[in-house]
Image 1 (spheres, rainbow, N blue to C red):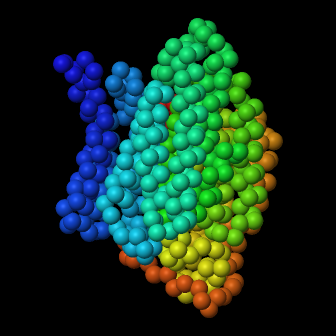
Image 2 (spheres, rainbow, N blue to C red):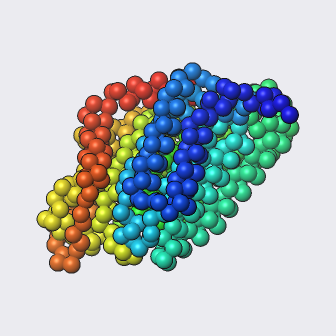
Image 3 (cartoon, rainbow, N blue to C red):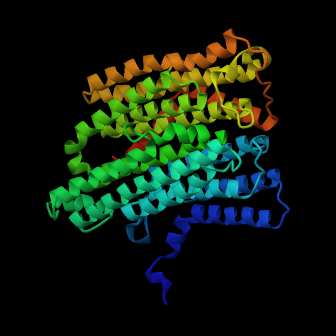
Length: 484
């Protein structure tokens, strides 16, 4: 059988990063089976694989490429997000060192391997040029996350969150798959460009099937990125998952979800967006409001940050609603800044957290007097999440709001600003507990040299992008031309 009719050497070269990460994951599992595994060895191998995958992406160049008969589309947009996934995956592995043992779970090779497989799934989602490929990437990502969320086998919270995520994740996948099937039935193709051409040419079999298919696809995406009212899984899952995985879950997979959502609606459904414009408006307003109001009443810090993540998803929908280069650029910038802030915050939570203990605000009391550097880092991340200058969080929100105002969404921006003011309370609640209160039985967290160095790097990024954001803004604006 001649395989060249199915794929060429250029196709294989295009998926070199995925091949490298797959081989790395298998090597990590082989080391585990050989019983020569040590956490440091597995981290080094996984980090090497992520680094080589980054080199392969850079070697691929900036030219647009269609692979495997149009199933994958490589451009500057997918390349930018690929580097973000690799960065988040590497930092998650670094922050996980020692955490699993402290939480009563033996360090195993499955953990870094599953993170690598999750990164592959995210890369496929945003490289996809076909609904089938989006589905395959989504499933690979989801299956890896189901296991990672329930990785602490002796922790009932982790078991519960893993089961909930599995059931609701499978449910949402059904919506996405049924939406793809209806879209195929209406247009005769699942290729993004083919769908757009069919809609533009007026050769759609049934408008009812098409709009129902788009609605179900949007519902599937809304589940994955936790848009209200499809967000109710996130607080339980975030609370029960290992804290380092919670940080991973609310950053890179959310970026992949929004990246795929952007591509689908900008490339496949631009002609029908006017019909869905009001729905996106309502989703943005409802998500940011529900997220912030719910976060106000939480006593568990991880649940509070889960609802905070929901509210930030509402802000990101504003960028998709804008439907132009400024909106896409603002979304990409926001995803980078949001990932940096949350990775740092959850890394500190993993240091403060005690074995199988509910992580409440009480555990932060007096932290500033016992570990001033760690408390200062946490305060910086909270201030940035709240959107105060001169942090990157302020620039990220300003970019989204200004893009929405330019398109005439004044009332939506007013709602977003009011929600931002509400968020100040629960972000500063942590700072108040660290600085202004004391607790004799609170924890004495210790920080390793590598973790401290990475936290310092994240803090530097928060301030650099807050004071001189021009470099990254130029990059994101250039990348936005590849989608718009």
